[in-house]
Image (cartoon, rainbow, N blue to C red; front, top):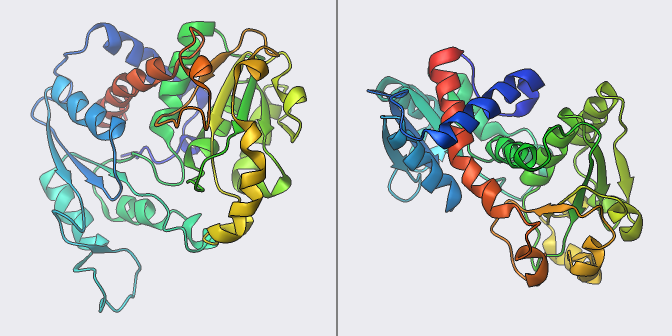
Length: 333
């Protein structure tokens, strides 16, 4: 049995196989690949694209889905081993994972960091514990990485550009009124470097660099393709000649959980918003974002509504790649 927790654990060729099969599923949506199978979806955080695409995806493959929201329509859950459960949690992840494994053929979970302590959150304890106790495959619907979004992103880029090797890819920090999870930034860095793109990380200051684990993996993947991961704080340098611009906001890790201290810093960088002037410096670059996107905060209407924006195409691809992932875990691994 193999889980789909992060693309770190999967080779480029295996990921490409899933993307290729997703392309065929895009043409032929309804296939009985999960006939008489059931999938439990655990949502600890809100969702629009993820819930819709997973529910429809299971249905289109002939399976059944159960959606649970712990703390709302299911009991609150404890994840720490050896904990004294005298708080809100009513049951432990050990029992939850084993019971759901007895009922269902696959489990998927969406759980953001608690935003208290990055050294704790970076361990991704929730999904790791679930995977350890489950006897069925587990899928990451977004924790501190977002591997399903990664494949949807790569699929959209390949549909537009073909071979991605050597294409200049800019991952740019953008302003947002509040700091957000680094999951999509971590993931876009991983997948772009793993597929051989010439990746530039653009952020306001060194305080906005991603966790060293992902920076080091990105550098390693880049070197394996004869590339080098570039970090810059200069907007003009980053955009110059870019083939892809991917925008995302994330919080500065040194201020993780101390957002009021970070606010006056991030408020200085509203000009990082993606606009027509910046895109004009590129090589007629594609623009994308994982969505939801705050217009005229992260990117202007002109950029979002342009023919070069593939955010909707990427969002649609979530449905197809997730079906491919589920098929891989159930029928091929």
